[in-house]
Image (cartoon, rainbow, N blue to C red):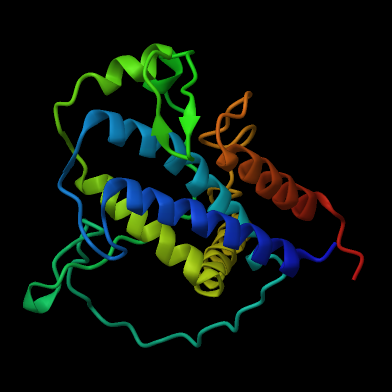
Length: 229
């Protein structure tokens, strides 16, 4: 299996979809969002969650077999407290970009599962009226706070545009995980949660559903293939 070719093919398709989300939000790459109409917010979230899961699996594939050099131990230095907010301000008032989350969130109650109706997609993202739960939300045009959504979009496109950096991030975590396991400390074993990934839908309603299936299958096949080298 040519995994490098698979990464390039899926990356290019994912990038087109993500850029379409930016266009739907009327936001430039690297820009900010403040509010969005409820219908637009909902349409973006239906694609954003599976897109994030697909990119995480591309990172898993890119990090497979990656070996990093161990950093030499440094002298003990007392450091000041690290900012807890991943979007904390830096000196000069510059906002630190939010890092892409390498790990699937644990399974929680998902309000989206309440709605069993599936939207009809027009030209990729436009939602037509008269199709169940989504069209009902589309009539409620009260703006929603979209600041966090904008940060997630930016983190997603940055991760996709620099997969080698994200693969090194994951490889460093894997080294720490292995060290913890050798010391018999509890730790998470995989960035992918067991079972189906976040954003998975049994019935495909958008191109992102097909891409997520392919990326998830590739990552699982790679992880579960015995290393014969």
